[in-house]
Image 1 (cartoon, one colour):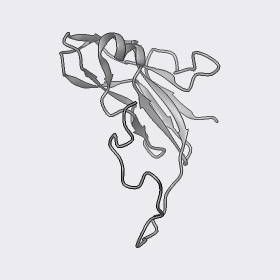
Image 2 (cartoon, helix red, strand yellow; image 1 turned 45 degrees about the vertical axis):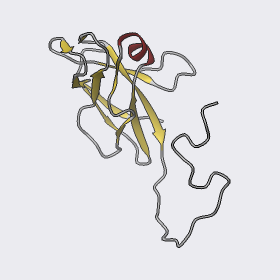
Image 3 (cartoon, one colour; image 1 turned 90 degrees about the vertical axis):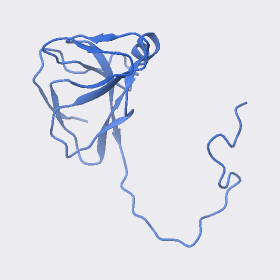
Amino acid sequence: MQIKIINKSAHPLPSYETLASAGMDLRANLEGPIVLAPLARAIVKTGLFIELPVGTEAQVRPRSGLAAKKGVTVLNAPGTIDADYRGEIGVILVNLSNEAFTVENGERIAQLVIAKHERAEWINADQLSETSRGEGGFGSTGVK
């Protein structure tokens, strides 16, 4: 799949790091560092603008190393970029650790996954089919 992209940053385009990678790293495009205090959040711009084909979305997801090592994650994970959005890609980062975290220009802050999706058409119904699970949810199947 080919996707049009405008890169207004000084950083390389997002790319897959390995043959089997699902996501591409997004980098912060900053004039100066951003300090995230504990529990603080910020929209970090990337300098990237994309034109997705209709029927696809771009999902902004956390980087596991940043989350595990620093407690910094994407707040609305996964964030969705719709095919008709033409603005700059921004990443909502949140610092869930007890220590301040500094986001530097060019730092890899999130992953971008391109995914196909379907559009749903609702059909009004009086009842739904029965399943063995039924209405069970929110941990109803147990933890072990």
